[in-house]
Length: 146
Image (tube, rainbow, N blue to C red; front, side, top):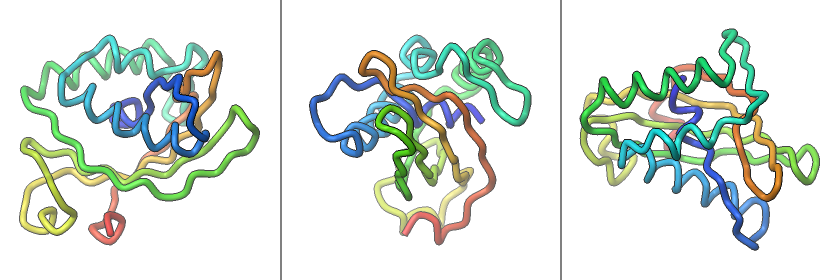
């Protein structure tokens, strides 16, 4: 659940909206690895709400908890579909492997202990910044990373 937040980052890039979303996934990975709670909290929209009943405050607590529980955070991601519902609203599907050590390729996942999830994120862009407004997640399969 916390990774949903890690997968959305702010971007003031003049690149295309799709390129901005791809860049924000990389920025979220960097923030997670650095265990930068403030940067991760900034990725959550004020009006965040999900089907599990989490709001922004609950997600901030999950970010803190995840950082406290994990001395080393490494994410390996594969971006799936990016769909623009409106110019400032998008959905993105991202497969995420969470591991205690770096993952360089999808081929490494078969031989390591990593938590695999697929996140379906609803993003909103306000003032040039993309943030998570809603997220849903479920276990992923190795096939999701190819």
